[in-house]
Length: 376
Image 1 (tube, one colour):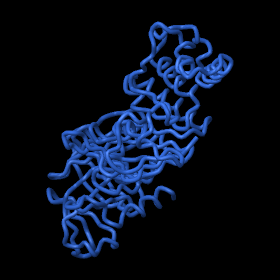
Image 2 (cartoon, one colour; image 1 turned 135 degrees about the vertical axis):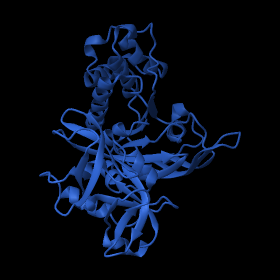
Image 3 (tube, rainbow, N blue to C red; image 1 turned 90 degrees about the vertical axis):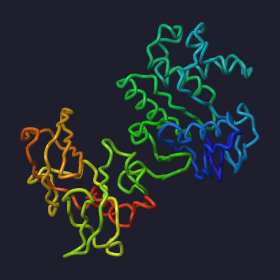
């Protein structure tokens, strides 16, 4: 296996459109890194540049210690799994797995050994003589992964490989790919628009938007310490509540919402920003029912009207409104007042986030206590 390093990598198309702006990061040997972001953010373009399917307009791209900017895809020692399975319909599973190796003119004994190993790892042994039309979606995806696996490349690249599967199969396949990574210790780069996939699979995540890297970190670093408003709103489901307002220094530092009467204490570390407009970020998990046993001591009280309840089994999502401020809370399932009635709540002030509305960057304060509170 090998590391992958991007140094100021940029992609500009002939019409002048910049798809990727100066991407710089490293994927360690044996690391599983996920590129995530909305459609058009540049994540697939970045992956395709690593694969050699897109040319690099500027910067350097290295696999191992070799600069591969001008190296053809076939000579990069990578294997790619696409969103489309791209299996040959007239070939059996065995023949699909072996086809690329035959093109490379490997000895028959070596081809058979690699196919057997891949079939064992991916539990394909019982279906080696079936054709793709006789397989389920999950089995077809495992064959596509197996076709990459038999090549024994330095780097595996996955381009939204689960997008065509239903919800249940997606969960199953992301577990299988994660387990495969643990068994192989392989270097893997995985592209998805699904932040749940990114959070559950990646050792580290590269969050992208409009061709720019917004933040790189472990799943919990992104969740607990989002660097800006985009990451705060993109990572986490449901998304973080974002409320414009101002920091006031009357009787201790407080946040006061621009719309409505939401008024809660703010960390003293934000005193240099007193009098300034800010955006408050509150995770739905940081809003509790007042008096609940799991609510932290010292939580800020809040009264809001209950507008909608979305039951999810062991938990429920509450759509709330306090004056002009709409909020979403995630709480354990329990009896509640009727929709339309006021609800007494408590906000965990140790888990608040604050952002500069102009730069959209996080203000240096609240996320560090959040991480400490979660660890405790």
